[in-house]
Length: 332
Ligand SMILES: NC(=O)c1ccc[n+]([C@@H]2O[C@H](COP(=O)([O-])OP(=O)(O)OC[C@H]3O[C@@H](n4cnc5c(N)ncnc54)[C@H](OP(=O)(O)O)[C@@H]3O)[C@@H](O)[C@H]2O)c1
Image (tube, rainbow, N blue to C red):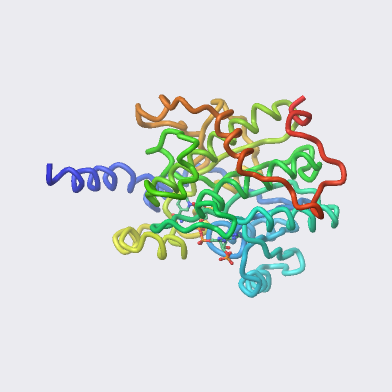
């Protein structure tokens, strides 16, 4: 019994390192066609677009001719990122904390006032916290950041016509979701029973389920919805939240561009997804479940949406949409 955790750790690394690290990337790459990366005339919005995987996706979009709205909390870091891309004028920086609903509402209002219509939305910000931290709005931080803020943003952009008729929405999820069956009420644990790695994995599972929900709700609309996994990438977040993991695997962790590759490819190709729920990784549709226990969850995508609706709150008066369409209306 004493060896059980060690056995689990060894099984984990043996199973996933060859695929999720650079080894998998280089093994698959020879079979890929070159991405043309022509995004001229498009507008992208990338959350967490000032560094890491989101920064790299934003950089590729700018290089391909797109205008990119990069959203993050730190204005100076955003500006430094904008100055570092091929054509800085194509980047517009939006300061907002995705973990706070009132900041998401304010962001929406600013974008709506500018008449922004987005072609590619990359819901990329994702954090893993070891310690339980509540936002000033009283929500568990990784739930609020990874799923609720993005849900609100996407729902409102759809309802307000801020996502173009052929828009692509990409959720940056994680292989970490494979361990977790959906238990919607556990997404936001604000009291005892919190475990950071579970909170993260559940929010990543929620992104995959929510993508299935948007796909069904907007089937035939011309819009595409995907969830993807970037692989194991050497980013600031990994160094901060998983220092031992990074120290062990540093030589084989993916670069930011390798992590962003499937985002850019999805945006360009908009492939047909066969399964109702899936996660894209290294340019291929992969199953949403690999363990027997996770599909047996009794919580459905509708339970998840109900839970998110319950926590989404109401817009502050000033951020009320001028022409608001309900989610139900959008579905019809
Ligand atoms: N790295 C990996 O190996 C890996 C593996 C699987 C999945 N993923 C997923 O990939 C995504 C990107 O991860 P990453 O490793 O590239 O992260 P990262 O390098 O830490 O980048 C984080 C970005 O998000 C912004 N950000 C953080 N918190 C924010 C908040 N509350 N509101 C708005 N912006 C915020 C940061 O800017 P500010 O600090 O200025 O806000 C920065 O632009 C995440 O969803 C993660 O779960 C990563």
